[in-house]
Image 1: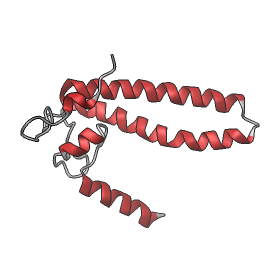
Image 2 (image 1 turned 30 degrees about the vertical axis):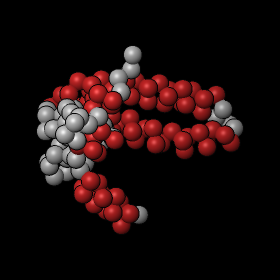
Image 3 (image 1 turned 135 degrees about the vertical axis):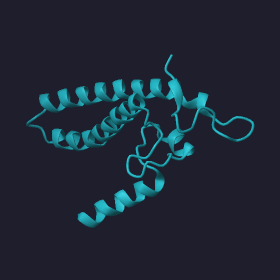
Image 4 (image 1 turned 60 degrees about the horizontal axis):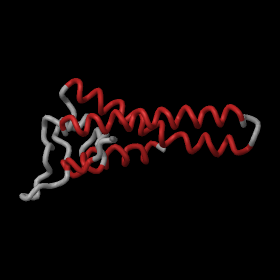
Length: 127
Protein backbone atom coordinates (compact mmCIF):
# COMPACT_ATOMS: atom_id res chain seq x y z
CA UNK A 1 0.00 0.00 0.00
CA UNK A 2 1.38 3.41 -0.98
CA UNK A 3 1.72 5.93 1.84
CA UNK A 4 -0.30 9.10 1.64
CA UNK A 5 -0.38 12.35 3.51
CA UNK A 6 -3.67 11.44 5.18
CA UNK A 7 -1.62 10.43 8.19
CA UNK A 8 -0.42 14.03 8.36
CA UNK A 9 -3.84 15.69 8.31
CA UNK A 10 -4.77 17.98 11.14
CA UNK A 11 -5.98 16.65 14.46
CA UNK A 12 -8.57 18.14 16.84
CA UNK A 13 -6.50 21.19 17.79
CA UNK A 14 -5.98 22.10 14.14
CA UNK A 15 -2.22 21.52 14.42
CA UNK A 16 -0.72 19.17 11.81
CA UNK A 17 0.39 15.91 13.39
CA UNK A 18 3.99 14.85 12.80
CA UNK A 19 5.17 18.24 11.51
CA UNK A 20 7.94 20.13 13.21
CA UNK A 21 11.63 20.91 13.17
CA UNK A 22 12.43 17.19 13.28
CA UNK A 23 10.61 16.67 9.99
CA UNK A 24 7.49 14.82 8.99
CA UNK A 25 8.61 11.46 10.32
CA UNK A 26 8.54 8.15 8.53
CA UNK A 27 5.24 8.52 6.58
CA UNK A 28 6.64 11.46 4.62
CA UNK A 29 10.03 9.83 4.14
CA UNK A 30 8.26 6.80 2.71
CA UNK A 31 6.05 9.01 0.54
CA UNK A 32 9.13 10.79 -0.84
CA UNK A 33 10.86 7.47 -1.57
CA UNK A 34 7.81 6.25 -3.51
CA UNK A 35 7.63 9.57 -5.37
CA UNK A 36 11.32 9.22 -6.27
CA UNK A 37 10.77 5.71 -7.67
CA UNK A 38 7.73 6.88 -9.66
CA UNK A 39 9.57 9.89 -11.10
CA UNK A 40 12.63 7.86 -12.04
CA UNK A 41 10.42 5.28 -13.76
CA UNK A 42 8.55 8.03 -15.67
CA UNK A 43 11.80 9.67 -16.78
CA UNK A 44 13.21 6.36 -18.02
CA UNK A 45 9.99 5.65 -19.93
CA UNK A 46 10.01 9.15 -21.46
CA UNK A 47 13.68 8.88 -22.40
CA UNK A 48 13.03 5.55 -24.14
CA UNK A 49 10.12 7.06 -26.05
CA UNK A 50 12.23 10.02 -27.12
CA UNK A 51 15.06 7.74 -28.23
CA UNK A 52 12.77 5.61 -30.39
CA UNK A 53 11.22 8.68 -32.03
CA UNK A 54 14.37 10.77 -32.26
CA UNK A 55 13.73 11.91 -35.81
CA UNK A 56 10.08 12.58 -35.11
CA UNK A 57 8.82 16.09 -34.22
CA UNK A 58 6.90 14.59 -31.29
CA UNK A 59 10.25 13.88 -29.62
CA UNK A 60 10.88 17.62 -29.28
CA UNK A 61 7.56 18.07 -27.48
CA UNK A 62 8.23 15.06 -25.26
CA UNK A 63 11.64 16.40 -24.22
CA UNK A 64 9.99 19.64 -23.07
CA UNK A 65 7.56 17.61 -20.93
CA UNK A 66 10.53 15.84 -19.33
CA UNK A 67 11.94 19.00 -17.70
CA UNK A 68 9.35 19.51 -14.90
CA UNK A 69 9.67 15.88 -13.77
CA UNK A 70 13.45 16.19 -13.75
CA UNK A 71 13.21 19.25 -11.50
CA UNK A 72 10.84 17.50 -9.08
CA UNK A 73 13.08 14.43 -9.12
CA UNK A 74 16.00 16.57 -7.96
CA UNK A 75 13.85 18.16 -5.24
CA UNK A 76 12.69 14.74 -3.97
CA UNK A 77 16.28 13.45 -3.87
CA UNK A 78 17.36 16.58 -1.98
CA UNK A 79 14.49 16.18 0.51
CA UNK A 80 15.52 12.59 1.23
CA UNK A 81 19.12 13.76 1.72
CA UNK A 82 17.89 16.39 4.20
CA UNK A 83 16.12 13.60 6.13
CA UNK A 84 19.44 11.79 6.41
CA UNK A 85 21.26 14.88 7.72
CA UNK A 86 18.46 15.91 10.08
CA UNK A 87 17.77 19.14 8.13
CA UNK A 88 14.42 18.10 6.67
CA UNK A 89 11.76 20.71 7.38
CA UNK A 90 14.26 23.59 7.46
CA UNK A 91 14.80 26.11 4.68
CA UNK A 92 18.00 25.54 2.70
CA UNK A 93 18.38 29.32 2.29
CA UNK A 94 17.72 30.84 5.73
CA UNK A 95 17.54 27.75 7.98
CA UNK A 96 14.13 28.66 9.40
CA UNK A 97 11.51 25.94 9.80
CA UNK A 98 9.43 25.50 6.66
CA UNK A 99 5.73 26.14 7.22
CA UNK A 100 3.95 22.88 8.13
CA UNK A 101 1.14 23.52 5.62
CA UNK A 102 3.79 23.93 2.89
CA UNK A 103 5.40 20.59 3.81
CA UNK A 104 2.03 18.87 3.76
CA UNK A 105 1.27 20.32 0.33
CA UNK A 106 4.80 19.81 -1.07
CA UNK A 107 6.80 17.34 1.06
CA UNK A 108 9.87 17.91 -1.12
CA UNK A 109 9.90 21.70 -0.49
CA UNK A 110 13.38 22.94 0.35
CA UNK A 111 12.65 26.61 0.97
CA UNK A 112 10.28 28.52 3.21
CA UNK A 113 7.67 30.59 1.40
CA UNK A 114 9.61 33.87 1.78
CA UNK A 115 12.84 32.43 0.39
CA UNK A 116 10.97 30.69 -2.44
CA UNK A 117 9.48 34.03 -3.53
CA UNK A 118 12.92 35.69 -3.39
CA UNK A 119 14.44 32.79 -5.34
CA UNK A 120 11.87 33.08 -8.14
CA UNK A 121 12.15 36.89 -8.19
CA UNK A 122 15.93 36.60 -8.51
CA UNK A 123 15.63 34.12 -11.39
CA UNK A 124 13.21 36.41 -13.22
CA UNK A 125 15.60 39.34 -12.83
CA UNK A 126 18.45 37.31 -14.35
CA UNK A 127 16.43 36.25 -17.41
